[in-house]
Length: 252
Length: 320
Image 1 (cartoon, chains in turn red, orange):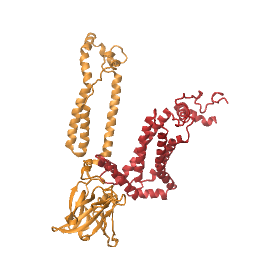
Image 2 (tube, helix red, strand yellow):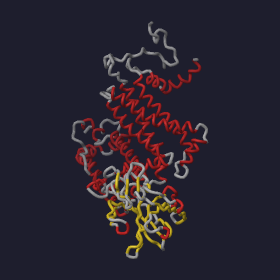
Image 3 (cartoon, chains in turn yellow, brown):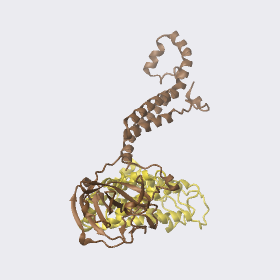
Image 4 (cartoon, one colour):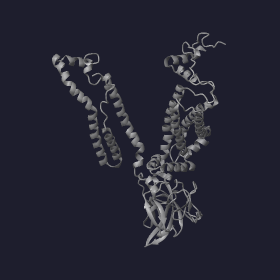
């Protein structure tokens, strides 16, 4: 057992990563936090599923007007389990958006956006349109009739915005008309620009969650702002090195 | 003067307005690179001028301070001759005495230089990337006239649903549909009504409200790719399946959300063949057929008003 865990200790001594992970996973949360508090990590999981399936789909997808539709049919019909991966990505997108709104509703109704967590609410509000844009840009990629005309309509809705709307539409199309540039532009936005931005903001979101702690539900009887109960000090990294007897074990 | 004492002092160097002019110059260069070279040259001139003024403004404080301290420094220097020069050459940081004489500590200079150089590098890298991604907005796309074949294929008084490629080199994605009606001759010149099928609500393809005569379909190959002509009888005008916009046979809106009449194509007769040119926008068509009076507007996107007070929401249009 000790030999098997030796690499973990080796890594911890040189990087402190294990300690950081333990800090993240074993941090204190309110006694009465429950299932409602899992919506955030459910959303994160949905995003990670999109990330994983998206990377695999990108291996087979061809962002070119003449072969995009055929490549999606190829993924669906020929590639082993391609239908599953594409289905996960296609339906997972809806799951991701729905979970975002559930998570947002939970935070709003619990009042968890209040001091000192206002900034984290703002980060979440920035994440929402990025996720919606992921949906919009991904919708064009199958390049069937639904995708094409839905994108035409979506871009033209942007175009009706006063003053700069026509330029915004032109920017999204990559020119005056929807053409080959539009598809590769949407593909790049969908799989590079937006996921990068979302990942960065999720990192900030999680940092603030860990730094500020999880809020109690509104029906909590616990007094707010209790002193943090520090776990007893542990010798070594704690994960592998056996702690001295009687220190980590709670007196029964 | 020691740097720590600068805490409560007024902002030095004083804030300068020249960066605004400098930024305008840079914008001029970028716009000029796309639009015209003389504009870029004017921009370059502005950038250099305001850049010079900015640098002068920023360094004004330190230059004045140098001028002020010089006589005092000159005193001991002239007395000890070459000695201070040697210590400075070896590295002023280790010697305690000459430090207060320095107007600008090395650490502050290095900090500023690192941030400044980093900003310059980031700017140099960013400008072409941003320019690359927004350049298509400002570029004109040139399309040749679309050749639809002999005008004898268009029977007088009958609508023909015609599809063709605007740009055959880019393929099927540039396929467009027009409703074309031969109105006969007016003053010995052929007259055509050429409506774009794109709904001016949000750009969906409208459909003729009436039968298509597929048995009289004409397929031909011209410079505009595979051109198909299908005669139709849109007795109820044209309708959009997306949000229910309805138009009459002149393209005027009769119901639903569209904000103007259907767009039209310019047309030309070349050696007895019908050729379509650019698209233009129409607010309303008065009259019908060959005697219709049409005010031509610059092509606007779907959903954008070209007349009435709402037109002021769309004062600028990117080149099409």
